[in-house]
Image 1: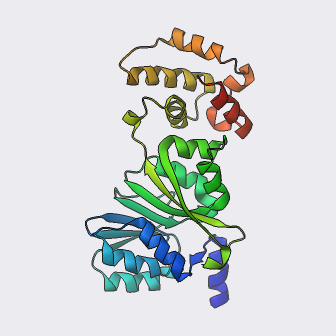
Image 2 (image 1 turned 90 degrees about the vertical axis):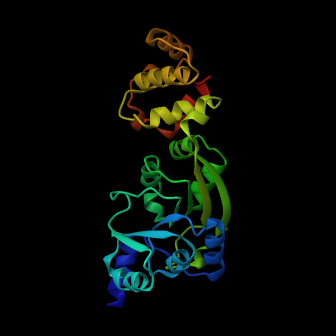
Image 3 (image 1 turned 60 degrees about the vertical axis):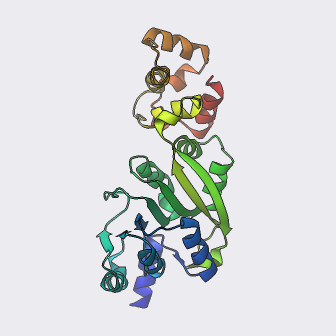
Length: 264
């Protein structure tokens, strides 16, 4: 049974945080308050959940692995402010909350960040792969870093060695904080605003997506830009026609960098 459980963990890309000092740092970084409603994604065996539940108004746990239900039932029996949703965090509704806390399976980092774009929360404290954290903090010109920085202020809190987890991941991890950026606060962040708008409509061709995003940016300043004027601006960027006719979602990281550098 133990071997089967271990196989399930590996299949789900689960790595449980076991280092007490890192767990304490995770809790401290979350700055929990008794008035807050918190969502924890991947409560595992409930070690961190127990502390969260004691410090907040309400805790919603989202767990994909039914093998962990006995541990989570103990948590529910102990606290009357805990609810549990069983399912994939990428598919289930994440309720409005003050904070989202999670040690993410690294294989779902990109779709999870995309999921957060449509969630209503004030702050997310996440443990992610160090490579992703470094790319975002250093503002690298790849799709995932641009996506993250267009929607969130990102703070790197600390790096975490593999031996802080069981089973150990093959790579270093990092703890980060994401704070959502409001659309109306981006009037002086031209490139971030443009990418933010375009990421919402990635199924459009780049030329159409860029045109509509330029119009929206000017509208944010109480002015008007016609489609003809917008097309003229895009022509001035001298982007390859093949690239302009691609759907935004099909651009390569190199093309994202070309686009970012062309915007002005």
